[in-house]
Length: 271
Image 1 (tube, helix red, strand yellow):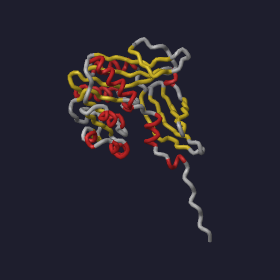
Image 2 (cartoon, rainbow, N blue to C red):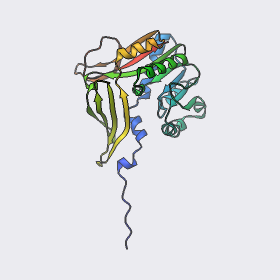
Image 3 (cartoon, one colour):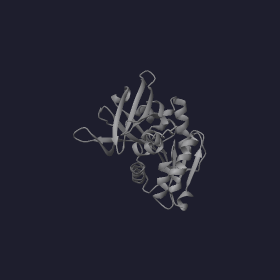
Image 4 (cartoon, helix red, strand yellow):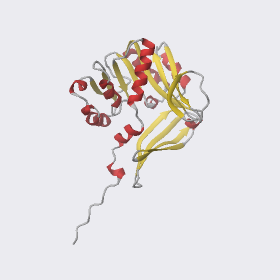
């Protein structure tokens, strides 16, 4: 009897979800440019030490160490699997001297103990996993205590009418499509269930590659919590739009936000 031929794996079966995430969602170089430039504008000198909370693959922590011979970073995440991926695919690409300045910590960001740092990052809306006010306040207080006297925390947020509804956004990238799925939204509690899906040229799919159960925190709510946690000043840097209404890779410090269907902002909290 003839042997059955091995069925060729689909692109989805061969795909690495973490690599796809880094390519479609993260832009560590752009974000760290913003962090360095903004910190220097406010404090008058460049930051050196950084803690990346909800670090995932620790991409930003690893990129940070390549930006200066004295730069040092701590990557904190509760998920050992994703941290291990980061060690193999981001950390292992660093030079030996750079690796000495990156520290992986599998821990709860609310209770982790690290040296005091210049900067703490909580990007990609990751802190929205903390749905209760008391939990988010406790986290922000812990960040405040781990910052140096001139330290700054950097967060991000999004909003607008599209944030308060179910929808799917499709983005065509090189070799695959990235879908952001706001699958469920409760307008009473502002809780939302979101997924990331990927689609490939061979018609194969990677559904629910990532899942997020969040609370859609408002900008003023976050501002109030940061001040209550002890931060002295909170700034909002809001994404700008061109004359056609398309979002640009530019952010302006303001609190007078135009009522776009979707807006994104960096939140900068000074200790």
